[in-house]
Image 1 (cartoon, rainbow, N blue to C red):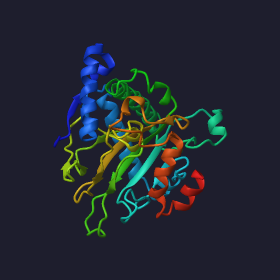
Image 2 (image 1 turned 45 degrees about the vertical axis):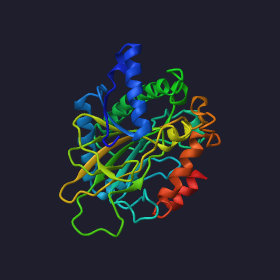
Image 3 (image 1 turned 90 degrees about the vertical axis):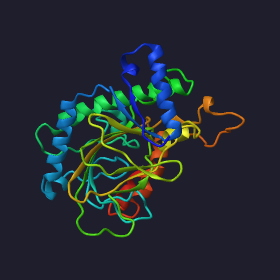
Length: 326
């Protein structure tokens, strides 16, 4: 597969079982061969998506004092504002040329996991921008549902019951991430990018982009493919956790973002990871004499912790990040 396929996923939500199986097979082929795919027919209202981008741009235009008032809480909570140069997705290269704002699962103040400060259970921090919180939580809820629908397709493709992942994603480690890549006029340091070469950490990522390109995906031969902007579609990709769960049947593909030279680039990523206590163990349907079990079981929280720590190890967030994941 030398291009990123476009898949209409509406039958997963409203089609017949037969049509859902056709979509599941298309998803499975994409997950095995390239690890990336576009989805249409997803049901996310375009007006809500536009509102999310408007609110995101408004936040990043705020003075530094406003953004830093909701600074990153550390990798143990994974919420809040990460300033320009605050992370390196490729730990062997200079810091990324981007800033971000992370929103996690919104928990009630009396949630027992929140009170106990369980791994990746923390309160969101919200900037004082009218309507920002309501917009983001509405969008979070909808893309979370969409991500669960995609998992029903994955389950069908992998020979599992359609609801196999349901109880593993009902209180997930999920992150809605607003991203801003400022235009770069001066030469960057050697190897520096808007987002360094990396694979995503969780099960699946649902990415909404503006009209400014820059995302590049590495195919199995090592070539870098441009991921074109398709209006109203999501760019989706498999993360390391689902690759591990599927015993490497599905592939988590390296990708990067090249910094824009003449425009601000905004994107909105939703990372869906399993519940913290979900046991990620190689699926029985993905094990055979030719494909023995490659990984030992691990919880969703422990796996994500192992991936987040290197990201912040060389930045100003390192001390906080490592302390809060210990």
